[in-house]
Image (cartoon, rainbow, N blue to C red; front, side, top):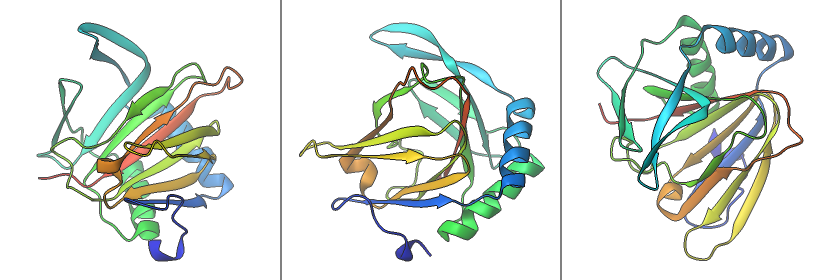
Length: 196
């Protein structure tokens, strides 16, 4: 199915924006349920040799044997909720890929962001699909090529789906920039294909 969705980058990987894939009822139901019922936790990360606690909250759900290590911290997947299973099936129907893990992020407002990085940890199947479903505040998502420094950005809307695949993680960085104009929360679900 992805082949019919334009690639927003022109080299070294694929980045497909599907647009809004949820109806108004799904957007409202998913946002409220996830905001209130996910086991959100602040994250402790090592940055510049110091441990910091992020304002952004995270949760990791996955098939039972999957663990995920990034920023020197290992997460064991929580058991899928019925709602997350429903959302995972919807995402798979759009991308044509199966996922066995989901990292969720809760950004309370535009002051909470994500710096330049690649999702290239050893637990992720190389060149696999990472599908990102956005709920809540619209946020800008940016991509930057590691060598050429070419950049692209796209506004991820409430209820929209974005997919990164192929060699993108090896060749590109991505980020969620800060924006003081944004005062509403955003929930981001990144469905992943991980080695099990």
